[in-house]
Amino acid sequence: MGKKDKNKKKGKGAEKTAMKTDKKLAAKQKKLLSKIGESDIAEVVAQLEAEETRIKSVQEAVCTPPSPRSNFTFVAHPDKEELILFGGEFFNGQKICIYNDLFFYNIPKAEWKMVKSPSGPAPRSGHQMVSVSTDGGQLWVFGGEHASPSQMQFYHYKDLWCYRLNNKTWEKVNAPNGPSARSGHRMVASKKKLIVFGGFHDNNHAYKYFNDVHVFSLESYTWLKVDIGGAILPPPRSGCCIAANTDGKIYVWGGYTKSSVKKDIDRGVVHTDMHTLIPDKCEAAKFKWSSLKATGYKPLPRSSVGFTVSANNRAYCFGGVMDTEEDEEDVKGQFGDELSCLDLTSNQWRLLEVEKRVKEKVESSEVEMGDSSTSTTTSDGIFTITVGAPTVTKSLFGLKPKLTAKPGPTARMNPGMCVCKGNLYVYGGIYEDEDKQYTYNDFYSVDLHKLEEWKVLIKNDQNAHDWIDSGESDSENSDDDDDMSDEDSEDDDDSDGMETD
Image (cartoon, rainbow, N blue to C red; front, side, top):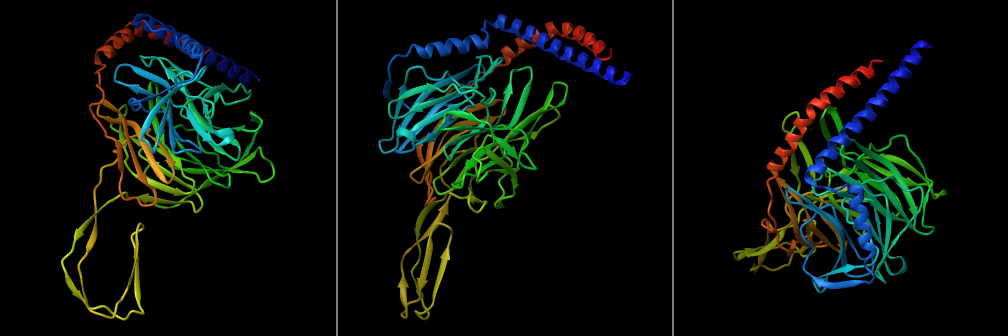
């Protein structure tokens, strides 16, 4: 009995210590924010939301392409040859900009248009958006985050929005029992439902990664109380891939989780596992997790991969990043430029090679062909050629295809991807080179039926923006940290005493 009471007392001491630590960190951050003149992030978001209510009418105009950005959402219009981009962020090394602009790209006209509608969502990145064909087309947006210019403060959203494409209006859907505030989550539309999985929450003092599942009914506009079973659940993660096949199964693979190694040192883990969320055939709100090992090509470990699903039950993935350890405290990102495909019917991976075919003339030759009753069929995965043997000797003068390297999207993470009318589109993203970070607004497409050549819609311009060295501001922050170090030591001594009571 005495031992139990002692453990209970220790628990209370640890809880008080955590509360005191949070209070200390909050006071430290408040001092730094005051020094740089930055407002509280919650107040900033409230002001941004108020600004949206001041828009009284729909405004739309043809415009230049979206500025460089990442962590935005990019989907195809459910009924038109049109692509839709919303939100995202841009970081120049010193300050971060968060967007809530809504762009439409008309494919036949190769034309961008910006649309502003009354009372829409506040600026955000790391959110999710899906399109459905209901009532002339709808966009559904959930969650995301807003960062202060210094990136010392983060605000995570838990709001759900519907944009009606036919009349260009936003509606905030206030349904109770939804997911907690988060970003980096994934959302997919399937069988008149929205499925939300994973994500993370980070307030710059503490962070948490999720593996929960939430289901929203597109018929009743309510978050359903769901029963999620399964012997093996996917570990918590953000930045993963999610896809729904035509049978209603939800596939989840890859992603990223950060965990503490020791005090003040965290280490990221890139996941390579795959899981399926299988709906119950009888009960609409019942699901079961099952682990899955896909066959075929095995993609390299990546998180923040660009991905999309086509109408032929295939998921396409491009890019992504994996942390490689430099030493105990430093990591370096290894970026990918692979294009791969997961068949959601056979659960098989393929590595897709987009090659430019150049025809070269071959020398004339005399070829003795065999009997016409025999033929040979060859295929390279793109073209199938059947050669029937003529009974005469003839000279062949022709062209032979040669596969060569091609221009296309370079290695990156968090690009936007979508499929429309059999064409895959890739837009923007981030690439890191040493201490510099390049944010793109280049734009590409490729015919998925031919895979012959990437079409460059907007060229990659490495000089599209300047990178600002933040060393000077870091030095100032370091001075602030030194100012607080004595206070930290005193507090740590006090908390150690509390833990041992």
